[in-house]
Length: 68
Image (cartoon, rainbow, N blue to C red; front, side):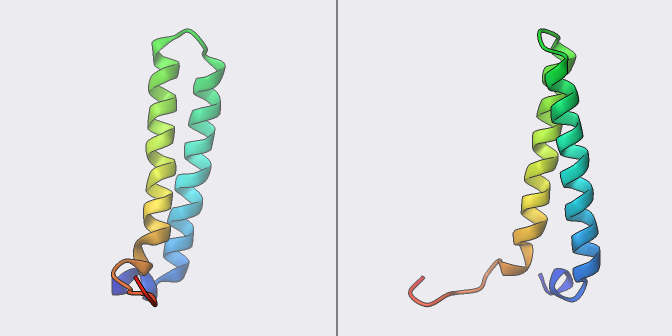
């Protein structure tokens, strides 16, 4: 977890990459309405968006806030 706190630039690069590729896949898959390949692309896009969220939250893992 300390790795992600120390390498903020790399973390931002991963977040941006996962976000933009994930959004592109979701939009491209959405345009293929009615095809199974479109659904597959959208699911892969959602996985990438969730990965961006995971990388974003990684440095805050394990911190105990007041009253938590």
